[in-house]
Image 1 (spheres, rainbow, N blue to C red):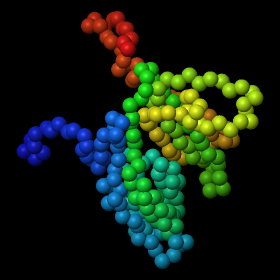
Image 2: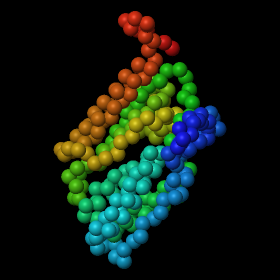
Image 3: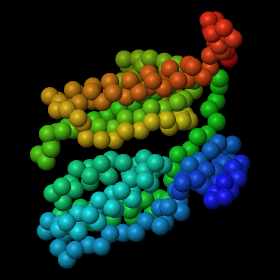
Image 4: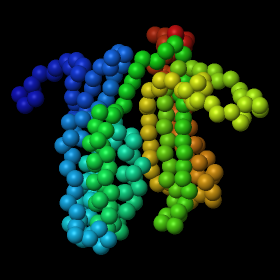
Length: 238
């Protein structure tokens, strides 16, 4: 109490551990890290970007990656490039420092971006689990995969007719894949196992994110359940 003072109630906007919470014009909440991103510094480059880094250079690269990794709490658009750069630390060259600087500059250029949670229309909700994966390359036998779990309003999409397959459809007009969402979970990483094909890699990443979505669904179910005092009767509330 003497060191930190009394507990204080925070109201929007406020900053906590480098993350800025603010209210949007539509009544939602936005999470950004503008001040932290502005404080990021580019890494010094060696004379030649083709030569392998010495231990000091590797330590500098690790520090730069760690600094940008904290910014990825709200900047999910930087995750893939950063994960790809992490795989090059062990045998890195000066080019890796240059690539890290490019990520830092991109973070600064779009510093106002972040996570936005706008009010969702309707009263029913659903979870969307989205995943994708690359394929093996000449540099690595492991694919890179990314996944998202999103909360969105329930939307019953209508099936497409065969005659419409050749038509170009605006994604914003297709129910179920457009509209507002709440980002709940993200993962971007190098796959943990080898895949026989791109389809195999995509299937593995989809199974992984589906398990995460199922856990989130159970938590939401528990939140919206009403328990009796005896703990035996359970009824769903609106």
